[in-house]
Image (cartoon, rainbow, N blue to C red; front, side, top):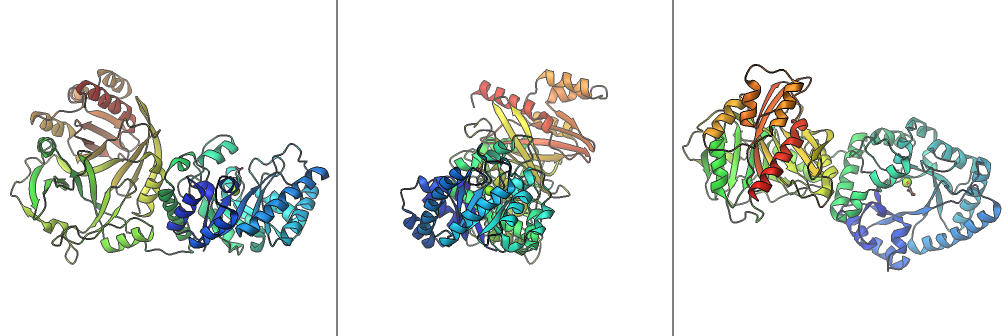
Length: 598
Ligand SMILES: O=C(O)c1ccc(O)c(O)c1
Ligand SMILES: [Mg+2]
């Protein structure tokens, strides 16, 4: 199906918006009136620009407060409409959106509304234009799609149809099943937008919080299935008013937008990109560092050993149990200091995983970084993290491990068994994109997002996981673009005995993040512990949480560059990440930073 996007969904000038929509592969655009008014280009130039970019102008919008008004007012509205129809001729747009009136002059009279819309449609028809009437969820007298359709049906004019907008329909709690009562050829346009489920005024909700399908809480696929059953064959068009997208760069937003439509089309069965290949585990995490001594001292204290070295590059493999960390000290290392640069995902079919990623518009990275390297498939996540699809030690597949020569140092400890989870801070503008990317491209399941209080802001955090927890990635973001308080990334290491692992670390000279005594007083109030247990946690700085499935004990190392480590013990079937404890951890990290100035 053809895909389209409203210019209001993207930031920048009209030409920037058009360029971004075209580059992301959209077929057309809805031109929002304000974008045209503010553009120095003439309508003819805009039309030519769209044509050059391979975009059709699918809709011009909006025309407001037209119907159900006194005759003198309606005459003025027709005069206004004539101007706009002339403009649309110059622009090459053949469909105009009329949204239900919010004017205090409008009266509650469906027959009058239908009669006036029919007269508007007759005028439009003279210009070769169709009118698509949309119920705004906050329309004065018409606020539901079935009501708008009833008026369109009553008007009975061939140049008048309806525009369905998933936000208006679902935000009002209307049952979308009734869409099937509308003949497909009378649905002149379909606008799609999702939104988080918020309890708030519907106009504010619509103007500030819409997001792309799959990023909110509405069943957009369910609604689309009803629309497709009518025989609708117009474009699938995204119309997203969103405060964050207004500020973000248009290019990545447009890619995010089109990815959401690709996934939606897959869900309803009208597109079939290569199927998701769900990763089964974390093959490795790669840290780049200009300060190898500091980083490897921490790794050594954690019980890791340098077990192998890359044959041709300054990259070492540090291992303990199934936890594998690559430490890259090469010249290509970014200037920003120590950070998590890449993740190797163990994949049942690396090539197929990469094909899906590419089909869903993930930037594909060069397969080989050096002639002798295993040719691994890799893509970049929205935050720039490189994701490698790996088949470690599986015959018939390129094996990254074979690029490394054993160094002959077995790990000194066995407390850590594997990587429990990776926590990545996302660029502020791309949090929803990141969740959709990880769920759609990698086939991970996105959990509910949680708010976490930081002493200097609020973090939003959302985990994406495989069903068995083999891969867990916690995505987080600060609440404001200026919030650079926590740009840290961390690697959580699974252990069966966090007390032993913590002791080993401190005895080897490592320093754990100190946690305030007040926290342990509160724990004592909330839970019962065996004699001495709480004291042990307090001495070491171990945090505790419990959910319906089990318990969680965890502690943190100091930060190196952007990275710190967590030792994490899950008991029973605990499924969380200790979010309850995150505010205490964040405060402790801030306090330490102030104390040490770094
Ligand atoms: O918020 C608005 O005014 C507005 C305008 C046009 C639309 O298509 C819409 O869904 C909302
Ligand atoms: Mg709309």
